[in-house]
Length: 111
Image (cartoon, rainbow, N blue to C red; front, side, top):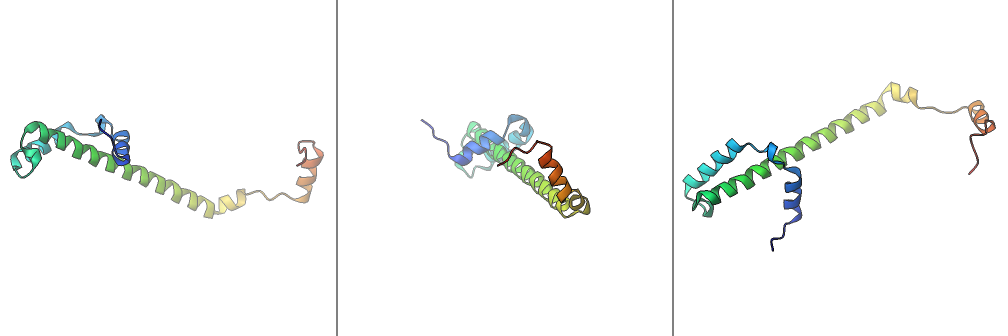
């Protein structure tokens, strides 16, 4: 029975077939097959399998980078918002009158 490592599982979850260019897989497989320098160049089938694994890994890496960039941009956007004058003006500091009216309104039921 074949066991997958955690990294291989992540790659297989992230990478979908529509992210991998079939043309680049075939080109890479042909280059591997023609090179004659590795185990994978013994048959075109092995070359194709290796090329598919490499392209899938490349696609997963690109996808991870894209997700990381999105997270970084969102974090930077939030930092800019928190440092902005609008955020500081939007934060509500209740006055004594607001607190008294809130407690008297019956909404607050106690701790």
